[in-house]
Amino acid sequence: MNPLLSVRGLGISIGPANPVDSVSFDVNASEMLGIVGESGSGKSLTLRALLQLLPPHARTTGTATWQGRDLLAMPADDIRRVRGREVAVIYQEPMTALDPVLTIGLQITESLNVHLGLRGAAARVRAVQLLDRVGIPDAKRRLDNYPHEFSGGMRQRAMIAIALAAEPKLLLADEPTTALDVTIQDQILKLLLQLKEDLHMSVILVTHDLGIVAGTCDRVAVMYAGRIMESGPVYSVFRAPAHAYTLGLMRSVPNPAHARQLLSGISGTPPEPSHMPPGCRFAPRCGFATPQCSEAPPPLRECGPAHQTACIHADRIRQSVRVTA
Amino acid sequence: MNILAILARRLLHIAATVVLVALLIFVLMHFLPGDPVMMLLGDRASDEQIANMRHRLGFDRSVVEQFWEFLKMTASLQFGESVSMKVPVISLIVDRLPITLMLTSMAVVLAVLIAAPLAFIAALRQGGIADAIIRVISQVSLSMPVFYIGLILLITLAAGLRWFPVGGIGENFFQNLYYLFLPALTLALSLSAILLRNLREALIEVLQADYVSFATAKGLMRHTVLGRHVLRNAWISTITLLGLHVGSLVGGAVITETVFAIPGVGRLMIDSIFARDYAVVQGLTMILAVMVSIVFLAVDALQALLDPRVSA
Ligand SMILES: Nc1ncnc2c1ncn2[C@@H]1O[C@H](COP(=O)(O)OP(=O)(O)OP(=O)(O)O)[C@@H](O)[C@H]1O
Ligand code: SF4
Ligand SMILES: [Mg+2]
Image (tube, rainbow over all chains, first blue to last red; front, side, top):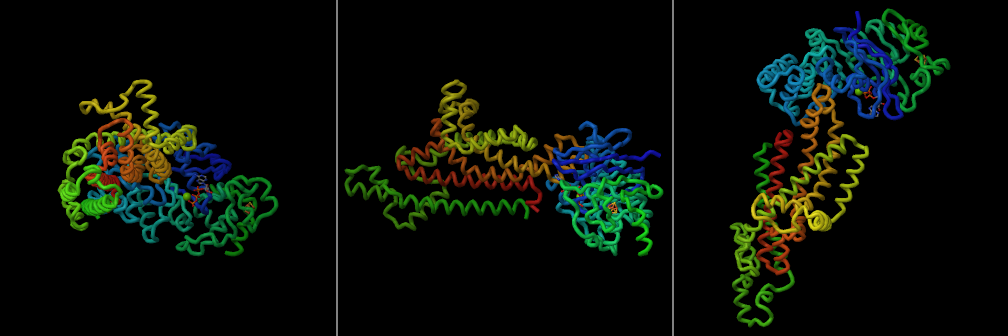
């Protein structure tokens, strides 16, 4: 089966910096792919690049094949028709992602309008159904509310309703729960899983939280300093990590419920996008590093069924997992 | 707080402003050098004549009494009689105010029409050549005095090219649109430079906002994103600024009306000051203060309409 979306060698440059470099991954139909990584690893840029939403001075290389066409090279009018209709996004902070001066109703109906041609009463009826679907009580009355009249969780539900108004096939969710309380996080994740089933939709879920990935995703890609370090089925990556960075991430999260203060287990800080180390970008912080690691960027290679790693010492990493386990 | 509460608060502000301005005018007039009685009667008036005039003008009563009288008169729009023109002040103002209102309204409209598109071009191509040119021009026009701009326009477009009349006003509304175009443009230029600068910054900030990216990500047309999401949010801060500058627009109108020989209240103000026609100056100052307060009120209302968070 062909993947729904196939990203190959995606690179992003903003001025002299290369915050994202040769990123490749696939998303299959009806699958939830997690992308995890520290702050600044390029997760948001990667998502935004797929819909040509980067700032104007950013440049992209590589391809992102969607229905036989390259999203990165689509003319403005074509990519506009993909946005929201075929591929939708939701952001981390619903308070800033919703327009503060327009009603929730208008922000839904304008999507219905542009993609489905629904107007007036028909659009309002549909908008009520959509708010209902994401679990907003008293949806009909809520239509005329402004974002600041909603609670944080309700705002996130509203943003999801808006994004999914035209029933896209792929949802790019950029840390949709990071700004929310833990209990509400759970509800929103359940909602996303539910909607993914109901709409036969695929989801790319960007998060800091390995616990969330373990609980919701089918596959995971671990990103560090703009590159994919390891990717594969969730059960395989978490049971047998084949990259020192993944291992570090897992060790620094003793309890998934406290995933917010992650990475205390890895010393040092990630490199600046303008001063990336040669070879493996994790080498300066890696306890397994050898001089060989800094010679050339290690490419992703198979290390198990559908499981890839960019670590040249994958075997040693796996051994150490077995020893400590 | 809802819109009504905001308006009620504003009305109170207006009342307070009126009393304060009245007090200020009263104090200033009282201590101004030059005796209006002497001005009116000349040096050779007899003591009796002087006493009579002082009584007629109420100068023989206590200061507090005079102020109370002044407040009462003000509230009922009775500003007395112009000593130089021998007509009630209020009828002078009623005569002259419409042309000034038209001039300043045209100036505001022109300023917005000039500033909005340029701000858009500059913000969308931030750091580009167009942006640089627009910023230099706005900087230059900001640093030029109103009367200087007026004279340049007068000499080039009116006297030189004869595209516009060099001054005065027409006989009806439509003629006035033509006669007042250059004066309004003069008045509009520095305001539009201020607006342009502010709107450009606001647009740049709004263009980077998450909700604009999200609106784009929904697949909306570019013009919908700009017109519905960007412009509206950017205007909110700029409208406040526009309201604040209406006060200085009144000051500009005084100069512009003088340069272009327009018989509005600005011109009336200047003439009355030189003639020491205190009653007219007082009445005008009061009326203008009230008008500016009303503009502030209108801006508040507009703000509340545009930004639902204000009335929340
Ligand atoms: N508009 C921009 N101009 C210049 N550099 C940028 C811009 N946006 C992001 N970057 C840089 O690119 C890198 C990756 O940013 P990105 O937002 O994709 O990280 P992220 O993985 O989403 O992090 P977080 O978890 O904090 O959201 C960062 O180092 C950031 O400083
Ligand atoms: S390649 Fe080398 S430096 Fe990079 S993670 Fe593996 S062991 Fe560490
Ligand atoms: Mg991010």
